[in-house]
Structure formats: C-alpha cells, structure tokens
Image (cartoon, rainbow, N blue to C red; front, side, top):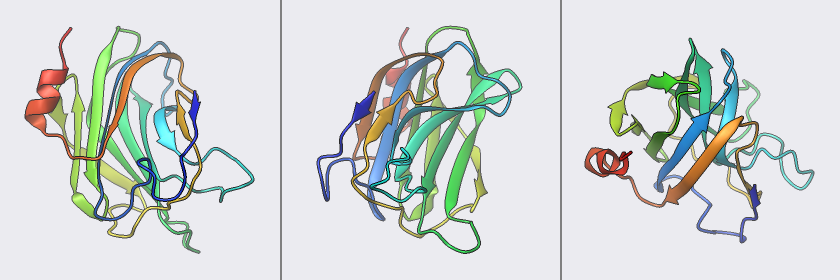
Length: 176
C-alpha cells in the first residue's frame, strides 16, 4: 500500500527534535533468517524523483533464530564512509507464524538514547548497527509512505504518532 506525502513539512516528515512512535499489529507467516520485511516506512521507494538512500524512518521486522525482531531504520546525509544508515534492532522478538503480535518503536530524532521498543506490550532493549547512534538529522523529502513492502503475512492498525508514547500506553495497547 502506498500513501503519497502531502508535500514539504508534512505530518509524515520527521527531522531532529521530532518525536515519532510507530505501532502496528503484525502476523508474519514467513520470515527467513536475516530477512527484513517492512511494516511501514517513508522513502527508499526507488523513485527516480528522489535520492536512492532517502529513508526518513521505518519500522520493519527482521528474522533471527525463528523469531521476528523489531528493526528501526533511517538514513542521514550520504557520506563517503557509507555510514549514513542507522539501524536499531530489538533484543526481544516473537515466534514467526504464531498469530497476531503488537509491535512499536518510539524515538526522538537527534537523541539516540531516546530509542524504545515494545513487543506485545513488553519493553525491549536493542542495539544500534551500521552507522550506529547519531545526532545527525535524517534525510527528509517528499517520497511516499509504503506499508507492507516485502512483508509476507498480515498487517493491521498501523499508526504513526508525532509523540513518544511510553510503557504504560504500550502495555494498554496489547489486548487479545
């Protein structure tokens, strides 16, 4: 599913100082070891109108030892060192092909210590990789938002908030 960006400084554009919380219910049926599947993301669509590495923000799941783990990815300005990707993966996951699971990530751009993740209402730690933690702003343009790119299974109730939601709110979201 593709959702067009509404233009400069839209509700979907995030830069330093902006808080974001992304949440969704997911039910992946297949996720191989190391496979990354997008739940939702802005940019990196391959459109000739935008830079190739223009990921403003994304929530994904990645396969790890039979589980799906959270993966938050964004890009900063392209550099010669190729360290412009910033990826955070959760420690906690859930078994693939076991029904519906609620996942969420919260972050304040420019503050790498603000990163939070939740799986089924439980907070999870994680680790930064690629370019690691950064205070640099993410790439921002008018590329579209895509839901479910490369995802095998079902996705429901995707929400993008311009706020950092907390443990209490996330615990209340997980109700079967």
